[in-house]
Length: 82
Image (cartoon, rainbow, N blue to C red; front, side):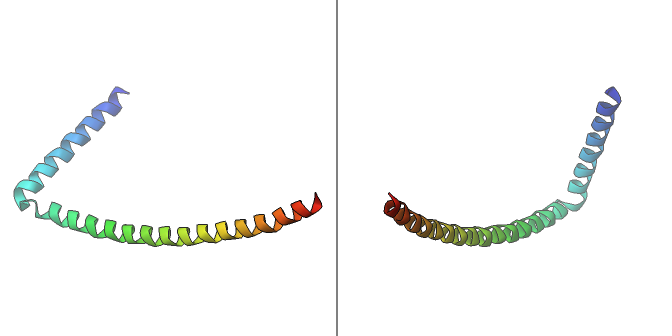
């Protein structure tokens, strides 16, 4: 277990040093590029989520209409049978 923590700490230290080195050498341009790419990807995911929400709303409205029609039909039949 201690070996795991030691390896994790070394990996975190190496990652931190790489981050600092890239920041100092390139002035953070690589990180800004990565941020722009993430932003573009998140916009695409957001648009897809909006489309999915619109479709799910349409499906939900259709289900509610169908449910109401079924309740109307079965409700009338129940009243007739009583």
